[in-house]
Amino acid sequence: MTTPVPSLGEPQPDGDLIEAWRDGDEAAAAALVRRHAAPLARFLTAAGAGEDVDDLVQETFLRAFRRIETFKGVSSFRTWLMTIGSNLLKDAWRRRARRPVVALEDREIVDQASDPQGEAVAEDLATRLGACVRTLPRLQRDVFLLRAQQGMPYEEIAGALGTTPGAARVHYHHAIKRLKALLKD
Image 1 (cartoon, one colour):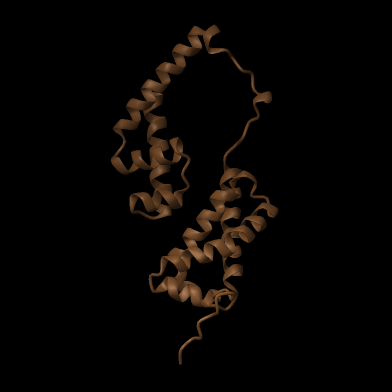
Image 2: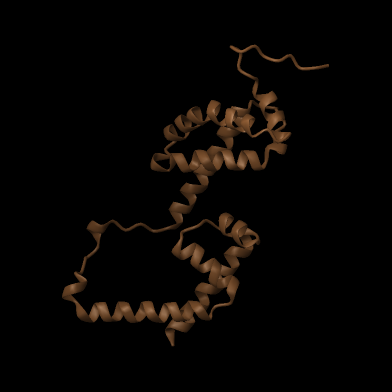
């Protein structure tokens, strides 16, 4: 039995677009994005995404398309996207909660130009840290730099380095431990 082709004024159902995407039709994926990006962005904004909304929408679609074979059609495609987006937002909040944030008003700000000793100490520490980072084993060094310098989450680090998020956490922990020991000397 063949599926009737929608007339020009009728939008193609999500299920048909999903099947077309599964068969390699990139225009079908683009149609799904056009149809669902704005409602997803509104949902994430209302849920508190703030300035991260564009990144969250993009990551939601990336995850959905990477895992399109897991979509069983029990709920609507839009509901499935909202669930993925909501989970990504929760993950972002968890990452932020683990990073202490200190407001500039609460810190004593020292003008580096008026504190030559402070500037020299900071320069020396940066030089020593750079030298210590270069002594780390490759995987520890790469995980440390991607996490500490680039702020990447462990899931992205794992994907970039071909490992698991758990292994990335362990490598980061060992890198921090080793750097502390090296800098103490």
